Image (cartoon, rainbow, N blue to C red; front, side, top):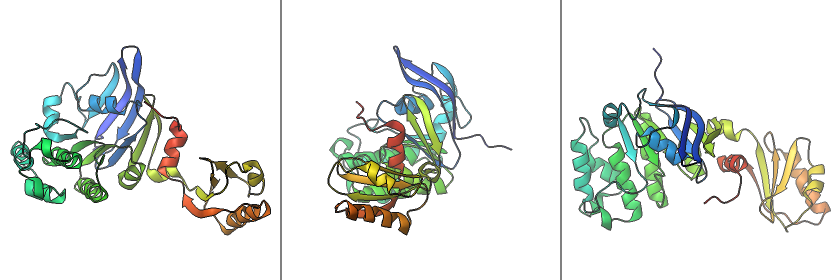
Length: 308
């Protein structure tokens, strides 16, 4: 028997006035996977997630969550789905520990609230009202509330926004544990490292459309990069002419240079770059070898201009 996906979206369209927030989006998130939905501000991510959660109705297209319609079958879905909002949703006067215990009481087989408080570093603020928690503590309490019922599927909207490195790693460990237990996770994040580290599948959305999808390894490919710093305005065409075939060279930003090849960086490439620098009197600083990152791919797909 074929298992229905965690989320399946086909031809989704949603307008606000004349503006199309989502313009024919189709994507699929598998069960027991972490699926990251990435995109710049205004790409349609939040609208898509809100439709999946049943908070908005699509204008066109179909959305199925655990095989069900999130609006029509909302009563059946709610006990099976956890939702973490980036802000809001918890009464400001609620004490952290009491709130989490109350949330646990609504579920048949909840995670022990004390265990979640400990895992997320909230033991010391169990009696603190939500409004008096720091922004990071509020984020972690919202995450705990989303997962306490052992949901089959959890939507996490920017789960580590504003967290310090220790809290971020604790959150990553919790998300990895959810996947290991069989839960499905839909993750929106602006941290490319987070998506690269956690996601089984990455989807990139821009202007309400899907522009790329695949595993992090599929999206980043095997390309290798050699990076260095030098004076701005070097002749990259001259540098490119000195490199092996199928190479690329660019300056981005000013004074930072990237040489990219389709395969791994080898000694021949390093020798070619350093020989060119010596010939042209260029002192290459901070020369290092890297693989192409998910952030590189994201910027290539969506551009570098700022979005409002």
